[in-house]
Length: 214
Image (tube, rainbow, N blue to C red; front, side, top):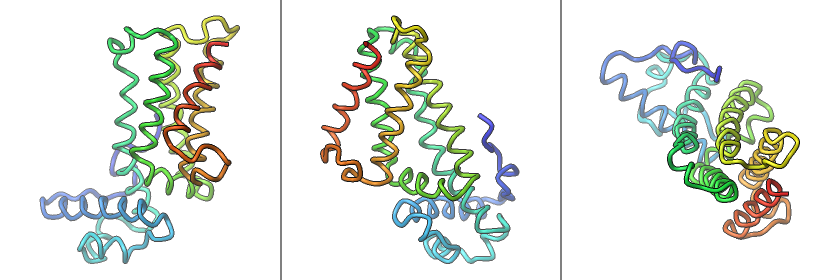
């Protein structure tokens, strides 16, 4: 991935002293909480400072603009989510599964990732439409997840009868991911689909398994 992975690339002047590091950690955690609870509209310098119990001066020692702060908070929030991409990397665990079982588990893991991080993802998806940098970084993270999803299912023989198994598996990921994005960002009633999260997840799994088995 080519997304920033250091403080300097994020436009952040990293704190050195322990007290400053602790304050900056509170700022990042506070920013994520504000995004989860109120979205980008609620994300203000004043709100972050109040929630983190820091003075604006302490914040501006680390960043120059609100957008630099927002992107640092975005990366902080996304770090926990991206760490979970590794669920697709445990070859030993996946090797015991048939193609159908692997497809079922792959979708279950994707659904679980969205469920656990729904509050942050809702905010991120909505702002990405008008924030090119968030859109770019989100695209990098999505492609990384799709690569892992696709590689694992190809390894287990998913879509083996297709002319282009890789294209078919990647299409399955795109469909599942897109459905989860819409439901997470806009709610269960937006598309008229099942109100129950369980029913939605079960239907999504059956659809993807059937698609790859066709």
